[in-house]
Image 1: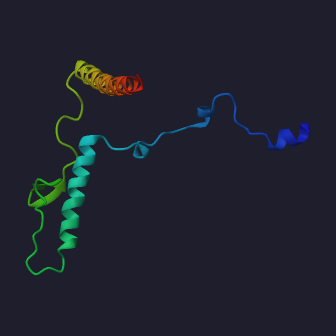
Image 2 (image 1 turned 180 degrees about the horizontal axis):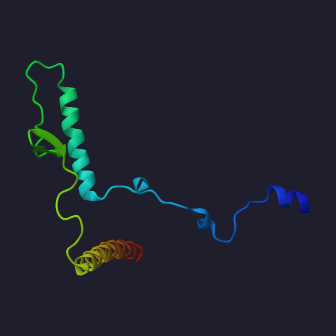
Image 3 (image 1 turned 45 degrees about the vertical axis):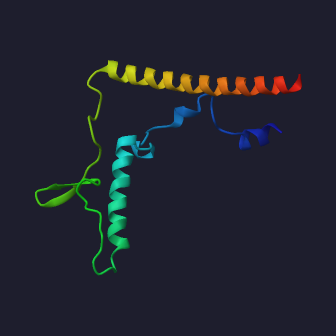
Length: 125
């Protein structure tokens, strides 16, 4: 039995992440502003393809839809706004505002549940 376990037992140690050598950023999802620009570009390109056989097509203009005109050529707009916050305080304030919104949403749903439970108790009496 010991020989079987020695051969077929999992080779992982105590720390499974110890074998990870690199992490590629391409596996991370895009942030909201980048995703929005990608959707705009995709929409503009699909508009061209969809109207490819029409005599007078109504095509979405690329400028303003994920593309910008640079030196008489269109180049993609990767995101709108600043790449990083100007201050760390901005990041902290944004995250605390999101937490407050989440708490408010939870409070509203619990209030609705309380209201429903009050109604059901009054029906029993």
